[in-house]
Amino acid sequence: MKRAGKDLTVVTYGACAVQSALTTADALEKETGMSVEVIDLRTIAPLDWETVFMSVRKTRRAVVYHEANMRGGVGNDIVRCIQEECYSKLRAPVKLLGAQEYPLPSAYVLEWDRLPYEEKFDEEDISYVYSTKLFALARELIARY
Image (cartoon, rainbow, N blue to C red; front, side, top):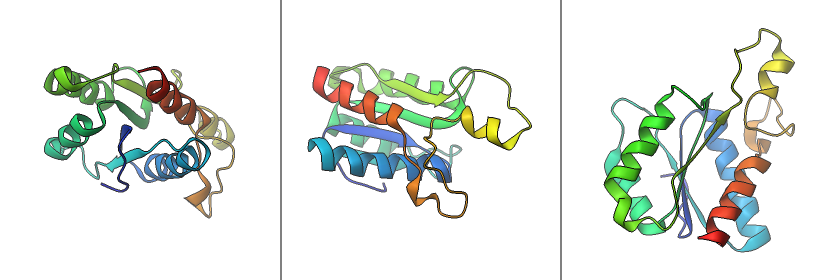
């Protein structure tokens, strides 16, 4: 776990996705007072299911957040497992947030356009990676459910 919280669990992996989740969670807490727990999986095989399930049972809401496409990726399997294992504890459906659905472009600028990060990305300092999509989704899940 990278960051403790009580209102929402964000399950993520990959350097930029983790940093984006942390930056966005900090912004969400600062602006709204909502507390987001961020879990950095570090590996997807083996995957630390115990930590994921324990966190989701505590917050009762979850978002799986990664750079991969929304379809056909490991994120869908993580969502499915959370739904199956934590169904009775969930207050909201588990959401998946990932890259736009089109082939990976060869141009650097286009590659970053498909990812779920904002243009605050600085290739020399990833601490400014931020996601308005994750911010809005987290805010909706917490406020609505």
